[in-house]
Length: 320
Image (cartoon, rainbow, N blue to C red; front, side, top):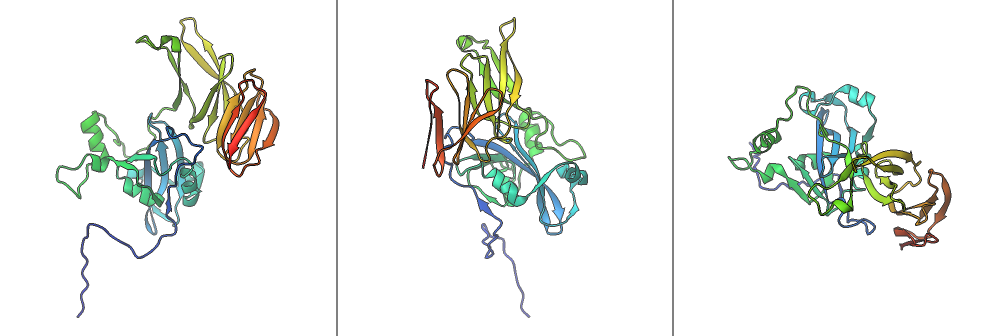
């Protein structure tokens, strides 16, 4: 008789290669090194014919603002939505758009790079579900170890209750990783008040998105942002109230002009036009109402930077 025994090892090496796994890449040169450094990531799982699979992913910035939320169509048929813990029900896939795992991987790799810090709880399970290899992580399951030691782990619910005095995941319908998150990503300060303790500032809400570029108009009566997810520009009008505090209101949303990421944005010193340039070869000159005045070819394989001259007469692009 031949008996087979299994042993628990500190590390496990599989002989199989899962071609669905992808690895985060180096940050492109056109990304500033001080932006997009830290994100929180959370996934929800459901049971399929092949076991647990990711069905929803959420990425939040440091302010708790959801910048990427997507339902994922699993590779195999769902047999149990795991609603008690995931909060996922069948209607979610009927009432919301969803993407394949490969499409979600492609989206995440647009703003999560090798040096991006991902924060999560039990993050290895989320990354394994997303089939993404990423080494720069902060996992609160290990940062705050269980008093009984490995392999036991503190639950996120316990950590939040014991360390923050807050209650989460108290319902019976699961939890939303973006629960109570507020869409606030643009801060404006009055520089005259910087030396005072009561500094006047304004926070502008950007619904389900965040700004990668912000530029002031020459008269300081408006500012323009570039929205990452929608890949378009929005103009906000700024007014000052009687008490001296600022207020901002959305004035114009431009149509989508580029298919790839915008790496350069500027406003002419005379305030007559706005320039945007993608990381490929297209540069667009807009009027203030969101109409395209001209679309230029930079004749570069990849564009890293684009600027408007101080006089407002020239535009320049650099790349390779």
